[in-house]
Length: 408
Image (tube, rainbow, N blue to C red):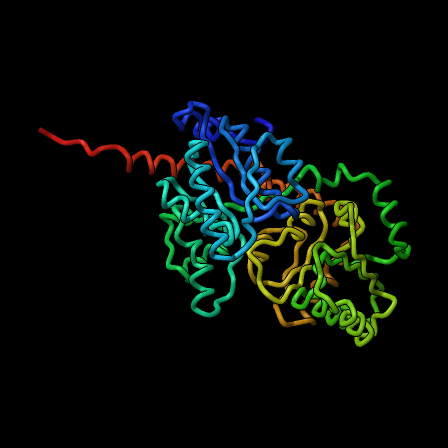
């Protein structure tokens, strides 16, 4: 096994596919390199390099850029995070030159603002286009639908979950000739309970001044409407006399004015003093270790829930609403409970079950949950599956480019 967790077949399959003889030159387009979600571009750059290829990435830049350079990928600064038609056309022209100069074999784009110039450049140069999709915008007016629909024009569309793949099939009429499902991986070395020392957990508990002896109900959340905080508060108010401490941990930029609404909602449910808001956390693995149960209760179904994956990898009990990809992520989970959306009483019951686990049950089930998380969320498997999509598309292109045989 190599550094990226790729099987030898996946490694050899993309080497030597360009005239340079230096391995496949794969160009990734990522709107920004600013958040944890953008790390997938770094993972794939590493995988391409490990597989003997040339990794090239274009983006508007961001805090992760120094890490990309350590991976060994070249970077081209392009404003891929905007929707201006003139910028899109300018980006496409620059990409055409880049494809020609670097002898790029295929483009892999994520985010609609990056997919448009990728699509135009791929069409002009004749190379293959892979589009990664991790969400689907709601239907809107005709122009917005046309703009968002560019994802369906790619040679291969890679959905992050079966739930999202089904939505893509229904909306765009896609079939399995072009649609693939590759589950998202997470950093299983970072989210490994064996690597999180007791000292880290104690330090975070002291920093947050958590009360001693109370079970902790934690929700990693973006403080915004629709985040599920109101649903969680309603459920906790229905639990009754059970003792608990609620920890709301910010994992993204919030909406202006929402914190005031949140405080009013806490007071309305009589949960004052039992709910703690933390606007920043620099050690999420330790935060998960502090939690007796992790809850996700967003009102809208999601295509993938990183917080659920991370909590499962840390062996924590998890409760979520039974919609979207949560149903997939909870499949056969020994430490997961699903509640019907729109039913605070059902959510309260699920949280109560999680809090009622004995210490022996927690220890017994935790190990199994961690093993299942490693089987589902391994980044090496994600990268290998994506490289398999690359290989498949390159083979199709080679076949199409081969002159037809004639019989005398």
